[in-house]
Length: 74
Length: 377
Image (cartoon, rainbow over the protein chains, first blue to last red):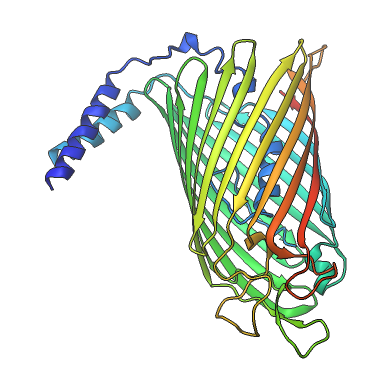
């Protein structure tokens, strides 16, 4: 119980500091980040297709960028 | 209890104090031609995506996707005959933006001759900490009906649920990272209704026979992925990612990704990427069982075997300048080619000669093409 209280207190402190924080990367410093080449999913229709290609041929799935159904078996 | 109340009040204050709005996805249309050719399987078709915003708060999307399949895969060659079929998938989506919160709904329907899938997805994302951080949550439910061609009386249900958590974080002026966690649960008929496993059978000339595979009726998997993109000084981007996967069928998998994107002159963008994937087999997978009904669950699906795949990709985009277009702001023409090499460690090629259980291990490579045009309006 004591550990849980400490954990909540630490989380609260983190969030309180977050409430009053100023971003360490200011909006006017984000030109590079807003460049299209920095987009994780620049062309959704294209990346969704590659995601489907891998998911239908591999045992692993999830933690990607798309959803949807279909078997794609054999 | 008072402390935890403070936590919630703090979170609430974030939501209420949101004054700088996030943005909806851009209005755009994409027409994609895709092609997969490898291992005796050819799949190609179009995918059309249109996304349009309404007012300042809503954005709707429509996607129509088709697979035209011609399959003479190793499974088909061993126990069936070459076939063709078509899969059509339609999906619609709606995004609602309110201050820094985006809520999304997506409905998807996929139809093929022996598999119907309907999926509903909900997600919510919130920008916070001065828009340095985006937290997202998502849930999907899929209802699938599995059929078997040539057997109208065969109909089985398979349902899935997906739970997603995401965190995107601006680390510096040049680095953004994302963390994704997804748990998926399946329940129902999870087999392939056509596939068989083989077992040692000394009474036959080949020394083996086949029986239908039997899968568990449930599956739960968890995947966690960490990805990053770094902006290089000469206007190029380096991206890297790692994903770890595990499920209660005994499959553990690791995915590593590395990519490099670099613009050239005014209109060109080049991309190159490499992806390595490795998985261990499911507990109930075997290329050759010692006898019939050797265990409760039986699989000889190469996707459940131990294997690696290596993908090397190259892409180029040409940005079209707006030369007096009335309806479009800009456009692009794109071409991507990926080569995937699959090498199986315990799945044998039964089309090749060899003593039973000693046939050559199977491997193949596939070429994947994406050619598409995009316009923004």
